[in-house]
Length: 236
Image 1: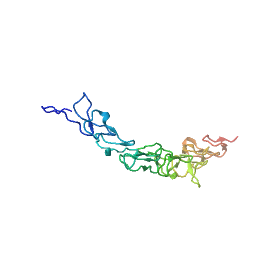
Image 2: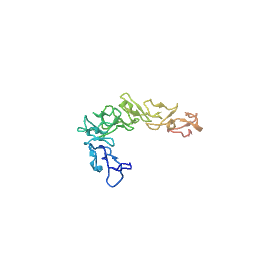
Image 3: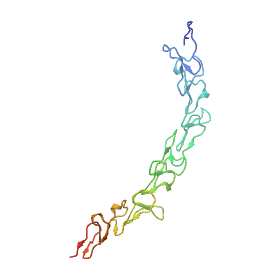
């Protein structure tokens, strides 16, 4: 390139730089992932590519400036290996890939990060390439790392074996979690298992609840043969 002094003369671009012919009279940095060890590079194609799996900063002049790229690992730019499933490297120059921690996974090669297990799944071991589904009728937050992080859905409670089972008739559970189902108010029950709200508790047969009042036995001389919130009927 030409100097800017009053006396013009040409200088070679230094290593790590090049000049495109017939364009600007300045030297440009070789792009990232390349290097140029010699002065006077005439164009960008003179910048040499780093070995596969490695990269460099812009303007690199030496092969030694190339280091393993994120998603790869090795002790030199000539042996950068792709991180396998369940592994990752997040920065340049890693000598070995890291294991995805419990609660996360990587299902791709050359990963630069691990992903949290999505809601409803978990991963209890490191270096996982996938996450396991929570048991039936249970759920988890993102990043769960153990089956115990899966909690019962509303309308379900934990039984003696640790499984989530529907709330029995006459009980309900309004929130997710491993708490027990709650009993319906006195003289009321539910019409099915797995109830999720106290609003699903209705008066038992032989009981009524008028105007929003609690369920109470039918008055003398009246009856009700079915479950529900209908009023008691006069005896025939």
